[in-house]
Length: 350
Ligand code: SAM
Ligand code: SF4
Ligand code: SF4
Image (cartoon, rainbow, N blue to C red):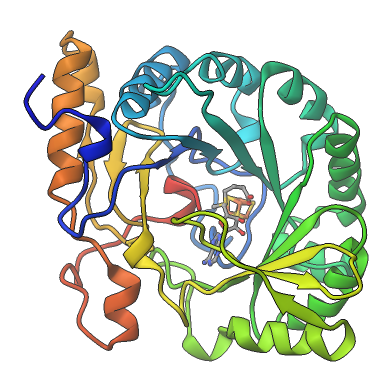
């Protein structure tokens, strides 16, 4: 190992440590949310990754072990729709055995659209998944079906959330992407439905990720407005952040009915604290959600090199990182990679 090998000292060019790893386990999804995989683009002509291109569970676990040795404390499984990956609970079981250099377990979480959760919740819990987040964009069934654009009923997702709760997941996070004029009428119904249930709704600003979702600033409803709308009905007070790198600002209902969060990726960039690295389904590492290019680790993995080689590559990649796209955008500064095609959300996960 070189002299800079200590995970606690692995920082990027802006002094940010590597703490969170998001692993996309599939680029496929059974939903076609317009903000992520619009139907017109992701139709029958779209070519998804072939099976041989995907990292196997053994390859994912091997890479994850290297990342954990370099400082990662949290792993989030995402996609596409992660529950579409066959035997995903097997991967959860493998990742749950990882330990940090200090001997602690890794916080292992998964984000899902909930469509298959009723069937999978218990197996995921038993395999060692620590936490779960479910995306729900409306409480009105018509709006919900329109948002997923495959006419999927809300009731099945709510059943999945109940199953997750019975399996012992708590608190369950509920993610709602808010698009002004499309589902902002659902902010209060969402707050109302999940208040007092133990679940935490997080309202996410519609982001300009990728280049296919037709993003427009006038469809972004700023988080401050989300909070103001909830406040009018249910008084809230701000909570302190519990950890650096936390993306959500947390608020508590004053009457004790739990909390909500807002993720203000557009109006209040949080790049300063961004400790996240993303691993794509085919083994490329991305340093930012808005990156244009990834670093290929699959070739290295399959070349027969040892873990120390891979660890050196990871240190090299992270220590060269200076990404802060959202911060630059909010200052009106140009994106250094503009002109190149950005990666898509369903490919890299949230
Ligand atoms: N399919 C799973 C799901 O929907 O939860 C996991 C993958 S999805 C890409 C991860 C998260 O990204 C979801 O909560 C989704 O709502 C969010 N997301 C996707 N596109 C987005 C966008 N343009 N702006 C903000 N959030 C987005
Ligand atoms: Fe699928 Fe999730 Fe993207 Fe919706 S947000 S299309 S559920 S990957
Ligand atoms: Fe992190 Fe990039 Fe998002 Fe900034 S824009 S918070 S650097 S992923």
